[in-house]
Length: 159
Image (cartoon, rainbow, N blue to C red; front, side, top):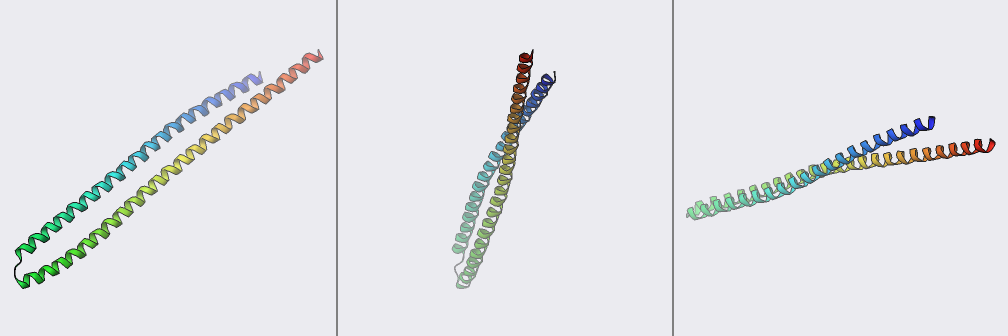
């Protein structure tokens, strides 16, 4: 009777562990989907930055060409040289700013991916723990069955 009760308790525990494993599987899939979404966002962001940079570069170059055509006098040419220097500095600052933004965004994405990986590792560790608990319970149940079978055999032999 006690063995039957223990078997039922073990079965209930195994069912509960199976449910937890199913929840863990769902959570892992959800984390995987989040990771894919983050990777897609990163790719889109890189493409958007490249397009924005090319547009800005093209606009600034067109502006510079227009100014060159309009300025004919020496004084205007000197001013143009000054403007070109400013443009170069502005472009360098823009490049630096874009590079810093890109690095920051990539670092943030890397941190998010690392956090997701840590969650997945924790999830896997929990699953392994659950599997180990199930195995231990099954071994304990098997051992108890063997003891009961031996006791029963001894009782039969004594009678």
